[in-house]
Length: 94
Image 1: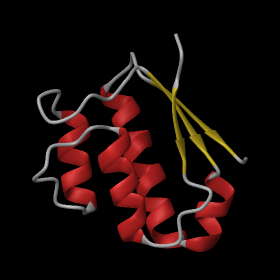
Image 2 (image 1 turned 120 degrees about the horizontal axis):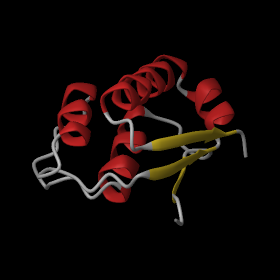
Image 3 (image 1 turned 60 degrees about the vertical axis):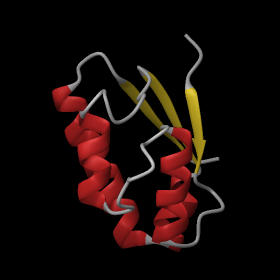
């Protein structure tokens, strides 16, 4: 299975990260561009198309550029993996 690659290495703001996630994960137009909305969308198959294999590329850069939101992003995905045992997410440096 070919993973969905989400390259966060050039992200410099919370807003641009949410815009990237909105686009890559095909969230609905009413996506709220915040972490609560992100959680709601990844958990509800009617609100997104989260694939079973995802590669997050550039996580080290994201941790440096927006550390607080990077941490929330990673923690949210880790919580999601507890709920969805069939999903595999890999964090890559670059």
